Length: 419
Ligand SMILES: [Zn+2]
Ligand SMILES: [Zn+2]
Image (cartoon, rainbow, N blue to C red; front, side, top):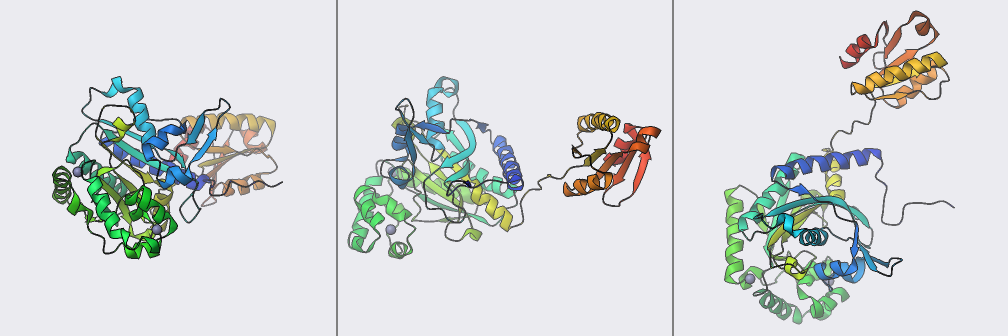
């Protein structure tokens, strides 16, 4: 029996894991400048949380969730997104945050959706997200989008663009839906089965359809922004004005709705032109009803998530991936027992001096040891053969120049290694 990783999942091998880790650290560093604090929640939650938060009629809840009964007969779901858990945790520990005008959280980790695997799309995928809970100010929308651009910029991604729209509120959403139903009504028979289903249950979702045939029908769609109520319209205008003020490039995309039900007012994506049809690296928006929906007081909020799998794909395509530092500094060879003891003491000193080293466990021969050292891309080899033990010397070989020298003390060796 030969096992492979489950369909739609993958192993992040060391080089890719290192790129992920460094990318995450870089982004968290930027989020920290905007006062976001990391909040780590469980990978699974009660199924009801996601059904309620994401929306019963969304693709995620209808088709894509990993839901199962645990041994206590509870319905459990592997998180398909991060916002619901953050809001749940916010409400659970409310007293710690309710004095703050806004509570800002960031999270990172795997999410799970049972989707058809395709390039850059996995059933276990990684998201790095932010949620700012507590403010209705359009400046929060603007600040968060500035942060998204700042974060990508810090990684060298310059060709990203914000696509933005407003999906309205409780007051104007019904008008938008009506308008949409009216427009779609005459052509609904020509749309894909998913869209026909959405037409009945969740008409806004129709705009989310990736089916190219459906897409062509949406070209002449009446603009949603025309149906916004005064409050939503003022909010949207203010956000756009402030993006201009801050020199942030954007396009208004009247068909942008995002695949989750909880959004209100501003929704946005940051797109890379490199990714083709699936081109969003980052997406999010305002969700002013979700906290109340999950049992809290009505509290406005704004957030986004970055798809790390796609982001790293873009970094690789642009040759912007961070350096991975997997090579070692010194490979340490000692053949005889006494040499072995001495080499271990040397390695203790090297590591305390932040020098990365590896030991030659095989102890076959010095030439085989050098080969192993080269395999690990070591810069130096330390060699303790019979001669070195006898003369109380340490040989240091530069594996690039192939030159070697013997030294009396580890301090001298350290000086050479540190250059
Ligand atoms: Zn409205
Ligand atoms: Zn469709």
